[in-house]
Image 1 (cartoon, rainbow, N blue to C red):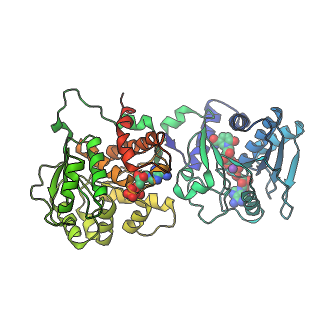
Image 2: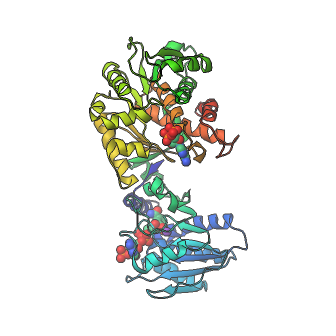
Image 3: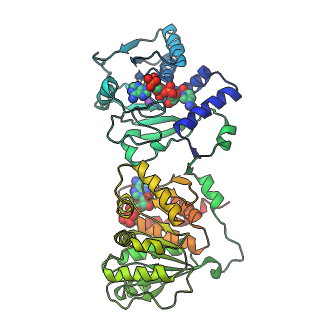
Length: 501
Ligand SMILES: NC(=O)C1=CN([C@@H]2O[C@H](COP(=O)(O)OP(=O)(O)OC[C@H]3O[C@@H](n4cnc5c(N)ncnc54)[C@H](OP(=O)(O)O)[C@@H]3O)[C@@H](O)[C@H]2O)[C@@H](O)CC1
Ligand SMILES: Nc1ncnc2c1ncn2[C@@H]1O[C@H](COP(=O)(O)OP(=O)(O)O)[C@@H](O)[C@H]1O
Ligand SMILES: [K+]
């Protein structure tokens, strides 16, 4: 599913009006109808509504929604935030229609006291949508801050007012929505971690915009949906043998952190690698061989950490490095010789990324077709401090192009920056995965997919989606609190099955 910018949304709207054809006011009626249906379905007969409208088309939606709620026999009050400008034509038409339906309308001018919102009423935010061009200030900002202080449920139409579709609103006044009903396609601003407090639960409402425009329009960003990921998944040939699925090298663990190595190694084998050799410190050999006899151990000469690249390197077709390795200078040297000697794609995670952050010269050794998997803190250590997630995704895309590798930015909607310039947001996963070890599972899984011959972009799309899906399946048998990274590994099989043709 494509992610449209505010400008593309306007063009999609205009194209639909011209080619369906449909009058602009009728398209607004359709959009408002979908919102009204959603509100009626989600809130019981006794619930009243207070609809706060701006004077642009977002406000026009609000007026039409209020009229529809009244027609359905609900209580609905309307507050219009007065602005200097005359309302948009569709706003003015909907104002007439609402007045004809005898809806109660309160005009809120600067300096006016904000009307009381009855306890239990749902606040509908139709103040500003994709047309917002500067941060909210003055009485608009005061209204939004007032509404944020109320205990009422808040439903935002298209975007929470104050949020921009395509750039950061960090530090600005923004409505804190409980739900956001957005039209036709997700907007970038609704997917980024920094906006999570404002968007609440996001629902995409189909308002029948032109499918021809959608398929013909190139977007920088897409959602990694099941359909997209299925198109990148490679089902196994019935005659396959273990030689078809690669031999992965995994460098993980140190004294006290062998759990990280085990989680990554188990995920690598459950992820389908044909063979796995796991480079571990001496203290970890017994642990690995007992807990995961399917993996081969490559013991480091050092008892407690990784220090020395194992002799023969040509047998591996990919390398995963990082979980639990620590950041000692000996381990940094080991990482340097890995990067210099292995001519295979890498997955670098955790402490491998921290080592890269400390020594920039390591980055230039990274073979093309690799995958870096930082969470936001590791990301900033690697690429410098960022003020917003919008800046982070631009940096990720630039780094992906420079390195000719995939850069992941892990989070609720993990961002996959591809060297082709495309960016994908993952759609699976849940807050139960916010526990030490989930990232190690992802490293093992991505390493397995590279071992099986997936290119970096496909491995990242399939791996990140499977990892989140395994989390979603696992949480059904657990709770968000009790979920363990090991449960993700246990449900990987069920997650894979969802990709089977
Ligand atoms: N595309 C679709 O699929 C469909 C879209 N639809 C709907 O249209 C919405 C977009 O409507 P829109 O373009 O009229 O903009 P909107 O968000 O109402 O705001 C514009 C108004 O706000 C004002 N304003 C701006 N910044 C401001 C500020 N900082 N502080 C104060 N005022 C500010 C600005 O004033 P101006 O800058 O012109 O002075 C103007 O008056 C979209 O989100 C969706 O809800 C559906 O109806 C149909 C299908
Ligand atoms: N709230 C969430 N929703 C979806 N995925 C999450 C959430 N929290 C964490 N995850 C996923 O879990 C993994 C955590 O990785 P990371 O931050 O490296 O932690 P660790 O390595 O300590 O397990 C990432 O893949 C991330 O996307
Ligand atoms: K809004």
